[in-house]
Length: 314
Image 1 (cartoon, rainbow, N blue to C red):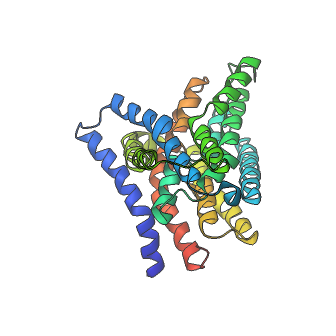
Image 2: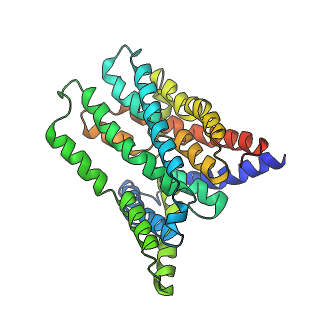
Image 3: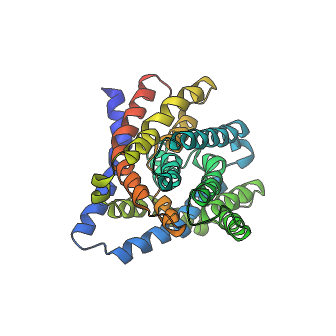
């Protein structure tokens, strides 16, 4: 019972904030343009500031874990390859790109950091997990969606340039690198700046999760059949079943294991739908996967936490 209570305490506050987002939208307090604005504000301002603050306060040289970053990178690459092979079974070739992206591309930043912060009080190993996986998420999403778009002849030089620029200018990556540099250079942080960073970063979890809940489309979840459910199963259950035991065998525990769980088993990021639409795909399959995994992760993450806590891994 103690392990179950721990798991519920870690997940329920997060998903209650998402439910509040749904409620505020239903009551008209959250309008569509406001929700989009909050999402942009969290992605471009509060989340990078949160990551900067957490890294700037610690000794990054000591916090750096090359083995962990390499594991995140390799597992992400293998996961993408695996779901790409699975997508070959789809009769409708136009769905393959959205299927692949939806099955591997986690909401590692907003939902992941909220999850880890709720357990440990800070972003823990999330910045290193993001370094190891998120740039690869973005690069491979562009590659996959380009080559599976029937109206586009693969990767163009302009698209490659745009992708690389998007990674270099990604606010989350900038926040992580800035915090790491601040830590390595051992620059003292004045109290005024520290409190401002803390207050601004503290907005990330409540705003990000409520906006995520308000963005939820139940109609998309109901319409998502076949490929959407298979991709959602892989996202929430399949990849965790395959790679969490490997992580345990390699000696990862506590905050490391929680970050790996987030990378493998959190819901599909909403930006996968946006990218699919912007790159000539219908976006129907992507929106279905996002809706199903957002709803399902409330139960699957609680389950995985319970298993790991019961086995004394966290």
